[in-house]
Image (cartoon, rainbow, N blue to C red; front, top):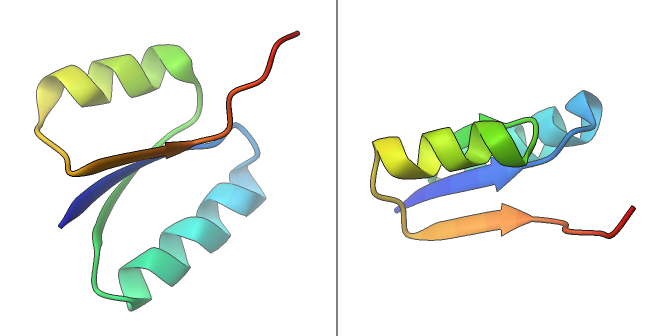
Length: 55
């Protein structure tokens, strides 16, 4: 299963990445919405994990 994790805080992203990889998932990281869009277009994934908020 392939996941895309979208998280702008690099420390939290690395913790999420490590935990999901350890659990056996193929994981890609994106630091923001623009990067996530590029990643999402480039490869099929089973899930997108992110925290979306209004500024």
